[in-house]
Length: 122
Length: 122
Image (cartoon, rainbow over all chains, first blue to last red; front, side, top):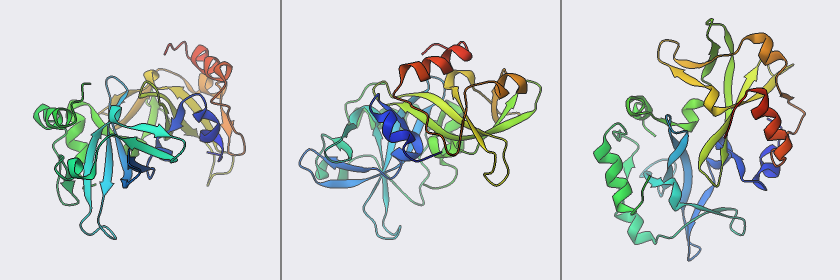
């Protein structure tokens, strides 16, 4: 797709999923927390349910993934990234998985655990 | 993200956006029409608004992109792809853009044109 496509669309709030991946995530204090690794979609509703944020690690070693309820993220033009109202300590204790883990997305318990941790409702 | 993550989740209708990209699209007659190139998200609602399907072309030459309203696509485990209730002729006359075009996603007229063509409502 030609470049420029998504930039223009953002004015009206349309953005391409592939462009979201790699976008940095900050907290309200302006600390960089990680970046968006992928988006998890609810196929039935067509909603984005979770953003999977990669967090820490170096060249993939020690990398952790945090699924964040999508409604926790707000796009900031100032940061050119997403802002979440969470500090690093909250994230460190949040549901996460490593590169060798397989989260069980089919488990309502797993999803409820994420939602409850962030006090999110879908 | 470890492989297997998305496969399990599909049981409950959770799928990763990056996995959607590249998925083939078929019509009801089983003809391959193209593949998903990207998803366009409505940032405010968190909904997937359009799937951009790449269509035809060889090594990128002559490639065309068709934005399809997301609600037109149904996932089929039999095809391991999406099925749309459209024949090739309908798609050939549908709104599309080439690799050198920039669709104006910020234009309500542009979006309404797509929705009207497919009789879709968002």
